Length: 183
Image (cartoon, rainbow, N blue to C red; front, side, top):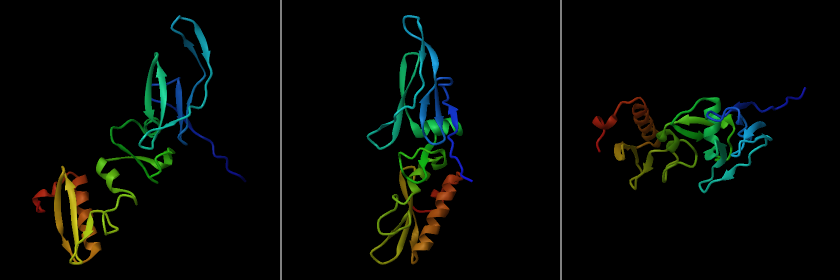
């Protein structure tokens, strides 16, 4: 038996009855009656919107309402419709900026968005927040409120990574590690 992949469509918040977005990241306008500036009612055919590529590599579409246009990022529209609106960062899990499937998107903090991912590694260590010194030891550091905190010097790369992870978790929980670590 073959499985049919159907798209699930939901109304875009603020544009209900005008536009919909799918869990696959597609945006379409809905067939509707529109009153023109002259007061004439006109049938408006629905169609799939073609996203434009922004300078930083994301897809966005232009939505119109009451003779005003608004450019919106497709990844933000998808999460707003299916999860709810949030001011947090949107993370593309597979790091493909044009893959706007719901299963590839999640809300996260700015810190999480900066840390997650294979392209977000530091210098000569494969672990984030860890650098290798010229003495073949490993230094763990973290940035809090634009200040770099030294978490310690370790003989093992994994120990340094664990120290970084503990400090990062403390920050996410609202515990400030500044009292424990030297600036």
